[in-house]
Image 1 (spheres, helix red, strand yellow):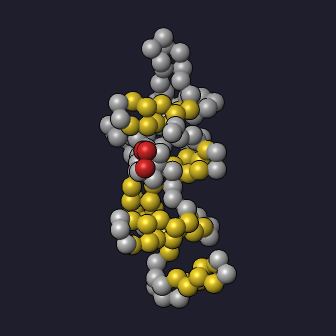
Image 2: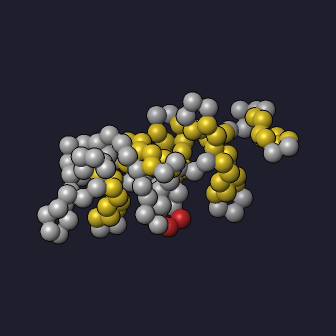
Length: 130
């Protein structure tokens, strides 16, 4: 599956083998990068496309712009970026980690991982202990 997005970026862009500017998602070696749909500049940080969120390595250097996957601690919050198929989209709702531990990700102002005991009643969750 190819991710999709749009966001801010470093002042880097990419072309294909014929030298034409490339836009959108581009896989280089084993890593995915996103090049802005308008100007082709490589995006970094949070990027949203098609209603899904992705996180691209935000700091300058050799890793700049690489799509991150798995558990990531970003701005004092935990996020899970999908690893199945290397899609990288931010997990929302329930996520089972391994054989036994369940996590719930929800959105207030931004997406967060729910911590504590969660009571489920009529399909809604309520956190009762942190």
